Length: 421
Ligand code: AMP
Image 1: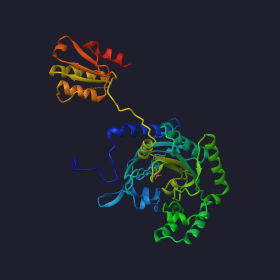
Image 2: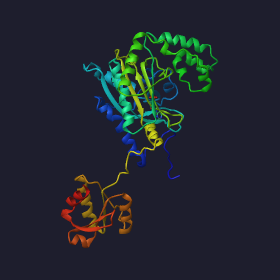
Image 3: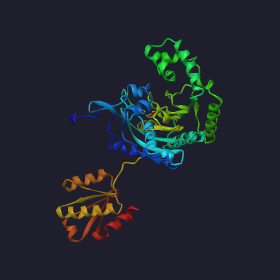
Image 4: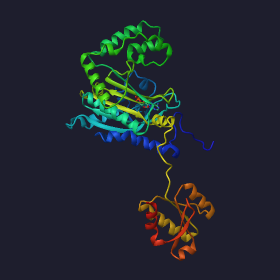
């Protein structure tokens, strides 16, 4: 072991070998949103714990088991955010963005989330999402817009093996009727105590239970699709038509739920087939009741969050490489004290002129420094010793061909810029 300390369980470091890919993924997931009128928003990584218990849902695993609560002066009043929808809505209400007269408020974010989960590949205690929320409008075109933007983002990365699952969760009119029917059905099954309790608090979540013994019993369960009211049916049909017109393929999944009472109508999930158990790369839906649950006015809204970590894993699974290793164009190798000063000044000037350049630090000899130059992947090495400087020269070595030419000091920046074009 090379250090006393390790990254905490369930976390990992984004090291230089993959950090370029991570940045490229965040950019790619956000790019379609920026072209569609979404503005960037940031909120604190911790919030009043009650925002999440109300805004994410008292009966969800996220709140009951997975929240990172912070103890402040002996009391747990704050928690690290497990997701950002509640925070974004809180910020919108606090700043009265919804009263600006311009609805929907369309925002996007990029940030880390925290859940005390059992870690495994693709499931971490700190992970990253790029997300989008469109707040304050009920319009099937808005639901379709967000789904299209997510699919376009995945496609722009070159991903192919992902699918979208789509469902409607109904609304305040039709869902309670369905909920009661489902509850009645679940009470008749052979379920463990925990699951029976869940069936009473939040029966839709039982549909999402991944255990085969539970799934086997759910075969004959009533489906929400058969209970949707006319309004919800028409709304869902419009979303489906708009997606089809935009060449977005989807699979109707009548058992796809998000499990929280304020989630309404459109709900969707993106899954990638190369990821094993943690196959969801993103998900979202409409949450028309959330604003009221955290004390705001009625603000029908829709949003999604795409997982950055799992998108990176999906790229690996499909063998897609996004970035070239970052290299400098120039690597400076000074021989002696005077050359150190002159070349250091030249490197600074090159950088200011937009040419990427690095320097042999640590007073190395010529051989070791030239090895560093090769390893750096630079196209040119700049070498100078006292004799060169006496003649106002530096040696410019092309590291691909090995050719070396003397260049006058005052012509160097222009010469390099020309050669690098
Ligand atoms: P959710 O907020 O649970 O709907 O999650 C949205 C997306 O975030 C998921 O589809 C995953 O890609 C990602 N995600 C959720 N939880 C984790 C986790 N513990 N580790 C890594 N990614 C996650």
